[in-house]
Structure formats: C-alpha cells, structure tokens
Image (cartoon, rainbow, N blue to C red; front, top):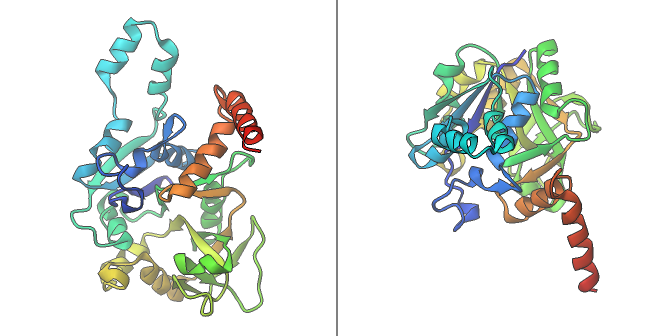
Amino acid sequence: MIRKAVLPVAGLGTRFLPASKAIPKEMLSVVDKPVIQLVVEEAIAAGIKEIILVTHAAKKAIEDHFDTHYELEHTLAQRGKTELLQTLRELLPSDVRVISVRQGQPLGLGHAILCAREVVGDQPFAVLLPDVLVDNHQQDQTDLALMNQRFAQTGQAQILVDEVARERVHQYGIVALQQGQTLAAGDFAAMQAMVEKPSAEAAPSRLAVVGRYVLPARIFHLLEKTQPGAGNEIQLTDALDQLLSEQGAEAYRMQGVTYDCGDKLGYLQATLAYGLRHPQVGADFAAYLRQSLLQQG
C-alpha cells in the first residue's frame, strides 16, 4: 500500500498574479478550504499517511496551515466556538503527518520530486500536483486510491490521464497507447510513450497527464541522471520515458472531474462546483445563481 505522497509546492504561481504575489497560490480558497487542503484530503482518502511538501521560503503559509495554532485554538475554546475549534483540529487525522523539504532552486518538477528522496527512501510513492483538483465526490473510491491498488498488483508506475480537446493537447504531456487502442474511464492500459506538449498534428493521442502519479522508488535514480530538458529544467517526463522502457508503465483514465486551480478559469469552475454542494451555503448559492441568470436574461 502506498503510504507516502510528494506535493511539489515550490512554484511561483505566475499564472495567478497578482493574487499569488504574497499568498501562495495553493492557499487560495475554494469556498472555505485552501486548494492545498483539498489535495491533501484526496491523498488521505487514498490511504496516504505521510505528506511531503517540497517547498521554499516564500511558502511558509502552507506549512503553518497544517501546523497547530495554539493561540487561535485557545481563543476559540474560551469563546465557546466549539464547531470552529473542531474544524481546525480535524485538518489532519492524528495518524497523518506533514513534512517539509526545501527546493533551493526552481529546476523543474523532476528536480522537486528528487528533493524528497531522503524522506521517501526506497518506497513507492504518489505525486500530487497541488494546483490540480481531482473531484471524486460521486465515487466510492477516489481515482488515486484505485491507482494505488493497481500499483500493488502490478508494480508498474501509474499515470492519471483524461481526454482533452485537440486544440489543447499542446498544453499537456500526452501519452501514447498501442495503435488503435482506446481507454474508457476507470480503465488501465499499458503506455507506449509520453510526449511533452506536442503539437496537435504530432500528438499520439488526446490523453493528457492530469497531475497524479504513483511511482516506484526507481524514479529517483533516473531523475538523478536526467539532464535538463525543456526550459533548462529537469523534467519528470524524461525520467518517466526511461522508466517506461525499463519497467513499463500504465495510464489510468480518471472517472472524476479535474480542475486546474492554477488557471483563473479552472479556479472559478472549481469554486462553482464545490460551492454548489457546500453544506452551509450550497442551497443559497444555487438560488443566487438562478436569480442572477434570470436577471441577465
């Protein structure tokens, strides 16, 4: 069972400036929870017990969010705000811990993952990109949990994918399957190759990597030898290509819905989806939206 997850949170969040100038983009809230908390909750639901944040000095707010705030808890207790106090105390289950390691230089996703090597050790682990939400609220098990189970059966790396429009393939890492093979939601298939941000004409499929991986510890050895690639950064895709040739890897097509919260439109879409089913404000929010649409004609 996969028990460790790496969350690379050292990015500058330039797509969300000026909001991310002083506040980490991962701390922007979807209703009343920061994006990073929703990602951590996804990891925990998949059985993860150790969250490894790969961060830098400007992201201390993320570490503080998951730490105990004794003064605030004391004040809430004195004022009898027991519900709010309980909410704070339930941010993390007692058997889950959060560890931070620093990425001294912004040298790419592959380098960020490599920074977690000493904490992960020789165990398989998950990687969750923290500005991507995967919403599995209609499923009994999350997509990440199913990927963990599949890894336990096969020992092969698992890559979460979903189909994107042809005009958007150049924005993603794209996976190739066997010629003519299709992949239905909830199914796994052997990968033949990965291509980083190909043109629509050169793309081997429209199956884009979503931002969830389950990887063997072997990936650390490969990342260590990976030379800087696109953007003069150490790319995870390059190491995955090598892993694919050595051990094979599988693509898993997600059943849930994904939101790119590093993108303004994706963030608004996530806020809408999560807001509509929020237990406290969802019904009123839905009524407000209906009324607004009527007023606008």
